[in-house]
Image (cartoon, rainbow, N blue to C red; front, side):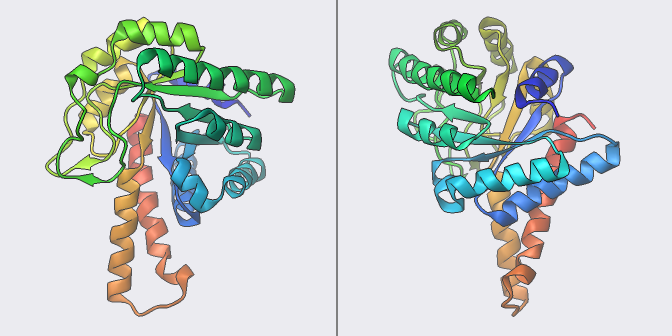
Length: 294
């Protein structure tokens, strides 16, 4: 089976994007994987997907447990399912998950001055390269540059501090990539974490093109929830190779659970949580079709 690095290269060159979906528990993992399996069976080949866990999510689901779950699915079904440590904010937190066998990580120093962000990212990348060499595996390293907020939830307005001034500067992106050696860059291009009531802002497609041309590596779109289908398609064409979806899954989970608990008196978790898994599956299925232009 191909590595995540190889799949990202294919996406970058082929004009599609790999779906990255955050999970907090087993139901969400099942929903994500079920959707990928369903679509893969329909089209006759396996679609690569990435499961992401932030620092908070991995503490809840278990750092070791999520590694074992993903690895078991991948080896049992020979399926290109990969695990990413999403939004980690310090070297010790990155080191701890890289040591456990995660396939990729995001070191997020976006709120730091450029020089400090570069130093933090380089320290994490250097460690990942050293460990990867010893263990004969490649660990994908990603950083965020430019500010897009930090909370994946429903918002009344655009997060404070997010503006055109905090979008990623192409020149800074070039410097950042050259000095850190990262594999992937997550820029600020009009995207935000979370979903705004009334609609998320439009993406700056021109900025995506400028950043991609300047930095020379695949780009990752964070804050995918709430973005229009048209913007997704244009962003992929402009240079986005991975798209993160989190808040949409959380909303689907909560709405399905509330509906089930209200309408039924069932007390067996596997029964009242089955509609939740299905709701997650439906969201992921739609997104995978769009991202893969199916």
